[in-house]
Image 1: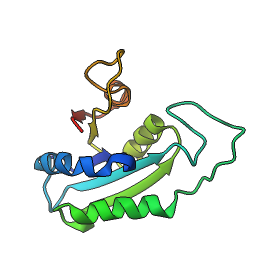
Image 2 (image 1 turned 90 degrees about the vertical axis):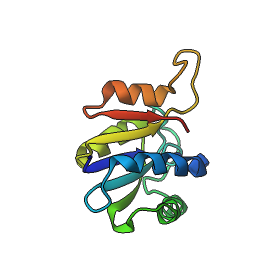
Image 3 (image 1 turned 30 degrees about the horizontal axis):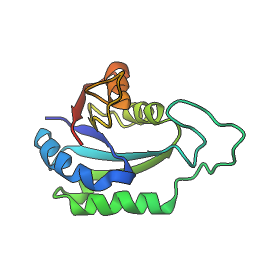
Length: 143
């Protein structure tokens, strides 16, 4: 069983993650596994998927509504709430996920495959790059 699992979520399609979480929690133990639900806001930070937009005015603080959305999601899933941490970060998505994975000592990242492109065919570009760059296992699930 894993002790610390990082579960990146796209707030724009948050409802699609409930089924994935239900399947994924079989990899955990409700009394010891800590889940980290993370959303990375690329818009308020001025960062995209690895690109900087230095001339645009953005806020470094995560918006309260994003945190509330993640908290509502955490409240709906059947898992002890004290074992779930919700995090909103701002920046380049892959960089922020990998940085937080290291800070939280995550031993597994579970991510949805996203929307594939012609270059990534079966796995979305973020999931494919995370699987390539992460120092811990990455489980890619359909969303």
